Each structure stands twice: as C-alpha cells, then as structure tokens.
Image (cartoon, rainbow, N blue to C red):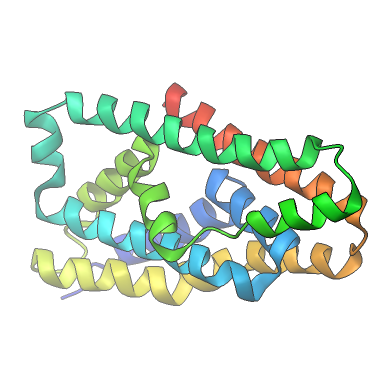
Amino acid sequence: MINTTLLISLISLTFLSIITPGPSNLIVMSSSALFGWRRTIPLFLGISSGSALMVSASVYGLGAVIETWPWLLIAIKLFGAAWLTNMSIQFLNKGLSNSSKKQGVTQSSSIRPFRFYEGIFMQWANPKAIIVALTIAASFIDVSETPFQSLMIILGIFIVIGIPTASVWLFLGNLVNKTVTDEKYAKKFNLIMGGSILLTAIMILMA
C-alpha cells in the first residue's frame, strides 16, 4: 500500500529540487545554448541516469558504505572538482582566445558537448548530489511496503515529473542558441560554459 502523504511530498520535492537553478541545470542550459538541444541530449540523459543510479544505490546500501569509509566522499570531492576544473579551463581558453578566424574555426571544432558517460560521472563526482540521493532514499523508503517497491515509485516519479521538469533548462538554452549565431557570441558562450563548469567544481569543494 502506498503512503499518500509521502508520495505527495516526494512529488513536490522532486519538482522543486529540479526546477530551481543548480550546477547541473546551468551546465545543461549552457551546453544547449552553445551546441543546440539535440547535441546536449547525451549530457542530459547522462545526468538523469546518474541521478537514478545514485538513488538506487542509496536505497540498497550506499549510505552504509560511506559511513564505513567516510574518506570516499573527500576523494570523490577532490577528483570531481579537479576533473571539472580541467574541463572548464578548455572552454575558458576558447572563449578568451584571440586567434584568427581560420584558427578559431579549427579551435571551435575541438570543443565538443559532454558525452553520456560524462553526464553520469558528473553526478557521481558531486558529493552534494550523493547526499541529496541519500536523503531522498532515507526519507521516502517507507512510501511503499518494500524497499524495491519504494524505489520503483521514486524512480517512476523521477521519470514522470523530474525529467520533463529538467528539460525546461535544455530548451531554455536552445532558445538562446537560436538567437545567437555570430562568432563573438560563440566566444561568450564558451566563457559561460566554462564558468558554469567552474562554478560546479567550486560548489563540489564547498559541499
């Protein structure tokens, strides 16, 4: 039997936590503005899959693992921040480049959207996202009679409510993409992309 009160709370929390601005949303929007929504879909699905895997792991013992080896969160924090900082530097370098137009075309081709697996890793490299997943698992494990049923309900709400809500950021970035085609704007969005990724790295270190 489903706990209706917990279910309503889960729906509300899912919507509010995803619609509000955050590092992942900023990166998705910046990527969509720079590359278009179609080329950003792998990143978007990667982040969504990473979140779903994290919640699943939390229901089945991730919290116990971290409690046993708390240094894992510190290692994840340092490694994730270093990886994201390296990515941000690449975008910032392109945005600050003063090379010729021909060189600029060559350089811009070396900048690519995040891949699917990088979206997954982005979530798992973020200790704050891990803590949120642990909180959701702990708070809503009793939404149904068994942990498996509760997990299915949590993931179902995430798919039905969370993914459509998160896609708002994907298409907001695409609206910007349609309005800017000039090379100077591409440089600006390289800077925005680099800044968004760097912000994520900083938030990881502060988590």
